[in-house]
Length: 399
Image (cartoon, rainbow, N blue to C red):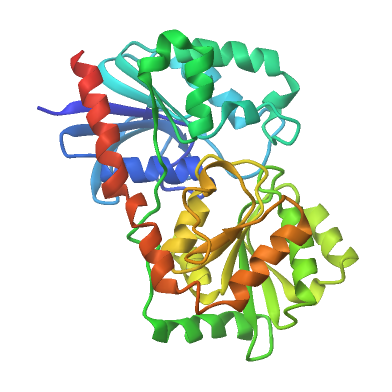
C-alpha cells in the first residue's frame, strides 16, 4: 500500500531555480522509495506545459509526480518587491487543500506558519542554522523583522511532527528553544546528485579545460579556480574576489570562473575593476547541473567563501567531481574537508587566510588527488542519506 507524500515548496522541479534547497527537494523526489506516492504543490515556470491551478500527473526523472502549481513565476532567481516566499503561502492559504492521509513535507517555515492544511503528519526540513536567517548578513528579508520571523518559526515548529535540520548547530538550537519537540529533531546531512557529479576519465580533463581556454582566449597553460553559488551576502562572492586578488600574484597563470547569479553582480563587477583582475575573472552565469559538473572537472580548485552555511551542497558536488576545495569555516564544512586529502579550511574568514588555503590546494595536486576527493564524499550519496529520512517518516506515520 502506497503512502501519499506531499511536498510543499515554491519552486518548479523542472525549472531553473538556483539553490541548495531546490537541489535537495529534487533529489528527494527522484530517490523516494516506491511505497510513497509523490505529489508537489509549487509554482510553474512554464504555464503552457504546466498550467497553474490544476493537478497534473507528470514524469520527473523517471518517477510519476502529481504536480499542482499555484501560479506562474517568470524569473525565479530574480528578487521581486513582494518576495516569492510570501506570495506563495498567501496563495496557498486560499486553496484550502486537504491531505488527511498524507505525510506533508515543508522546506520553509512560511507555508506551515501561514496555513492550516490537514494532514496525517507534517515534517519540516530546515536548511541551515536558523539563527543566521535574521542575522545582519542574511539576504533573506526577515532580517528586517526578526521578532515576526521567530513567531512564525514557533508556529511552524508547533505544527510539525518531525524536524530535519541540515546543521548540527541548528539541531541544538531547536532542541534548546523548543524542548517539547527535542525528541522530534534530527540532523539530516545533505547530499549531491551522484548521477551528474562524478569523477570523469582523466583523458577528459584537458578537452574540458580547453573549452574555457578557447572561450576566453587564454594561454594554453591556464588553470582555473571555480566559485559556484548565489551571488548574495551569505555566499560572500566579494570575499572570493578579494581572495583571488591575493592569490593572483603567487599564481599568475590561474583564472577565476564565476558560476551563478544574484543581486551582488554590480558590486562584483566594480570590485573586479578596482582590484585590477578583470582579465583573469570570467563570468559563466547560472549553469545547469551537467554544465556545472563539467566546469568542476575542468578546474583545479573550488573556492567557497560563505559567511554561513548548512551543509554546502556545492562543496559536495565539487569533491564528487574530484575537485579539491578551499573554504571558510562555515556550517558543516569541517566534517567534509580533510586537510591533505581533499582540501583546506582557512584559519580566518579573510582574504589572506583563504588565499593561503587556496594556494596550498592549487600548488599540491600530488597531495589533493582527484580520486581521493571523490572517495571522501561517497557517504553523501542520496542512497546513503535518504533511507533514514524516509524511514523516519514511516515510523512517525505509524505512531
